[in-house]
Length: 333
Image (tube, rainbow, N blue to C red; front, side):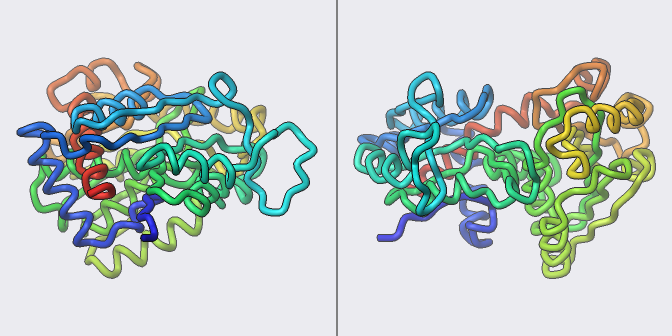
């Protein structure tokens, strides 16, 4: 049988996505009952992770499965992903060989690839995660590539549904915030697709020069047209947050200066006022705060709102566990 992969949430049709979210809620209440007994998941990290590594490994163990956890450059070596390459460089092994062999050891593979970092046009192709899905004979889960972070989006959807119930027509503000170490736009890309697919009214706020990927935005607008959702773009934090039920704060890299650290730092230095504080959050409609973490306190958001009663940060992070348990059950049943 052809394995089912999860590279982005578009790999799950509406019925399957609803099923996973419903199962997430049930597993959150009752925990796992050996659904992955006798099954092993291989986790390969080509860059760092805290929540994803801990939550996914715990999810497998709570379902009765086992984990093989490997980190690049300490547990194994660099891998080549290009088809037909002459392998006379640094990589001693091709992904096609690693994927074929690991598929004989485990029942699923979870991959966090590392971007090359020099060109967005290259990194947005997600060639490394797609190479794993091409050559593996077991399901491949994307633990965050350059373009997508579907595991975070599943937890975000679960968190939003717990707070708001039916998401259709609900107001969400997604706001860029300043950070000296901005994240990939992958979590925001996946959140945008997930919430517009659910019919939410989304306001996206960022300074000029921090536009999201054009292809992702085009697809998001198509999803909004199908679902009855709406996407509005703002250059003002206040305009985006006003009347919103949820404010989702996140830093992300500028695609204009991608790969040029000096220009990127100079560009960000002009927008230090972009952060979430109590005054801003008060503009919402009893608004709650979400953030995918890690978060730089008192830079991206103040302690007052991060630790206050409107913060959903820890519940949002906790929801990584049941949502990933549900996904594993669905992919491996």
